[in-house]
Each structure stands twice: as structure tokens, then as C-alpha cells.
Image (cartoon, rainbow, N blue to C red):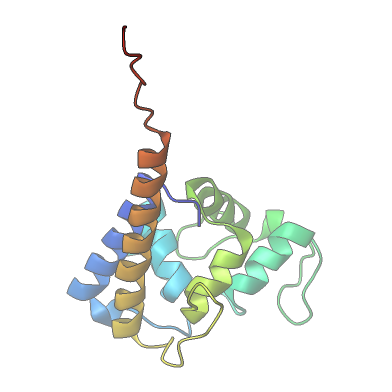
Length: 162
């Protein structure tokens, strides 16, 4: 994930939403799973419901390659594939998340609650672990952003006059 304040806010807002509404979470539905909740917060469409078969990794792979994933969609073109809960093309949802700072591998990291080393949380289907991961990721990105901002601040060097 590319650290920026908008992405950090979305991650925190998603965690706060789930803290208040834990029953809106279902790992088995693309509209209310780990990525689905973050997408709905990012697109400000919380409350809508609807899902597709497959995973967000499948959707992103399809978005990147344009190739049909066996058993996933009838159309080979993600252009024609809409989220039933928002009526927004999945292509546009993915594009929005990527413009927010998501990178291709982040969809799988979020869906499986993987750490920076790629280790999967075995409880990745539990809302409490998702909330903890979202807060942790937001904190990590904030530290990264603050450190990069500090590195960019240049202190002028004053020359001593004789």
C-alpha cells in the first residue's frame, strides 16, 4: 500500500464501522468481506448488499489480465461485470482502490490478513481480526508517511561568518 492520509482514513473508518456494525461482516460475500468492506467505505456506499462468486484476488487478476478465470465469470471482459450491491463496475471499484493507494498484492494481503512478510492470519475470516489488522495497517502506514515527511524536510545549513 502506498502510504497517504486518504488511505489511512479509509482503513480506520472501515475498522470503526466494523466495530459498530460487526454483523455486517461476512468473509464469504464479496460485498462484506475484508476487501468488500474497505471498498464500500472508500466508495461511500455502506449499507448496500450484493455479492459475486470468487474472491477479490480473482477480480484483481481479471482486471490486470483481462483473462477469464475458470468458473468465475461468463464474460471475459470485466468491463461488463458490475457489483450487484452498488451497481458500479468492478473495474471501477478496483481502479478507485488502486488510485487510493492499493497495489495489486494488497488485495490478497487484505483478504487473507497477511503481514508484511506474507504470513497469513489463520483467523482471517473473523471480524475482530480484521478490525485489528485494519488499525495495525493504518498505524504502519502513518508511521511510514510521517517518516518519509521527516526525511523530506530539509534544514538549511547556515554558514558561519568569519
